[in-house]
Image 1 (tube, rainbow, N blue to C red):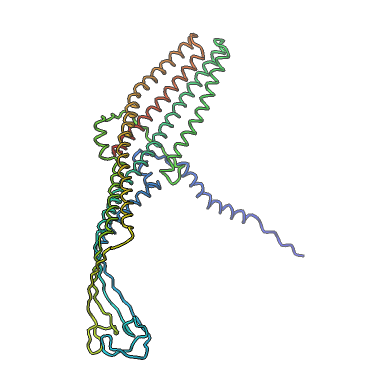
Image 2: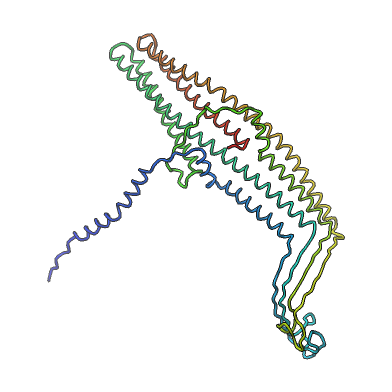
Length: 453
């Protein structure tokens, strides 16, 4: 028995290593690309622009506006005459007899009496026009619907902007609080180190160390919660901005140095740009057009037709014996409504009922706008006036903590007083951040009401 030498394993191993070398770098580059991906810094305008490209409700409003524009075009086109080039070939079985009909004298009689000849060819250009009040009313309806869709698009845009502004400033506020808690943790850690040093020097009791450590542990938990809140806020905004909501980005912290416009300036610009009021006005116009459309059924419609071509037993310009097959025909039709069992009257009544509802809706939209504006202006004014007080509270709490730490170092204050001063400062800083967020959001709402955002 001949023993063949076993093939060495080295060539297979070398092949696998080569394959890994060829494949692995791509994976490494993709991973390094993700890790080294530059963090984008987005302004509020950039965030709004991105959201308008990704949000489905806004996309639907844009589509409705384009569709309404097409409906408006179609309504106007219905007033214009239409042209059709009609071609037809008919063959009917003859019945064995002849008749004197047609254009060529005696011809075979078709078996169907409704047909004109055994062979019939039609090649005609037909122009039709219908004139009536209904067509003009349809134009008014389409124009009103187009105006309403334009306003509804603006309402959708403002709603989307309001959502983006709230999330954008929410991310900035979450990041601001995260930075505050990081500073608070450093402060608590520094105080914990101080208590431990003083305990070793037998200057304070172990209770001070425990109190400082409890404060440090509390700040660590608060910092963890703040990181979760910041991550959630960024993900919520990232859903509107990016294909992958986990994309790394940063927002620009808002500034509270803006001057609040006067009430008169805001009312003057907001009153003429309220999309809700404009939408109610457009709905009122649609209701008026619907009433006109319903009443148009009382009036007759005039139909006009002009036909030019051939309709003969031969597909030719001239038939047998030189008969001219090419010619034209005209017709006018006037349909006068006489009796429809009061259907038109009921439709008119329905449209008038809907118009009454549209009138009430318009009145409510006007009152709601006044109330919304007053609420937003009061909110913005109050938030603006509180900014200075919040700044003062932070400065006061900062100075109080500094003095309390000095008194503790000198042995004149307790650890409880220091912890209380730390908590007071953190509370004041968090309130300052919330106040800034409140003012920026309220100012954004006013800008949305005036159409400047």
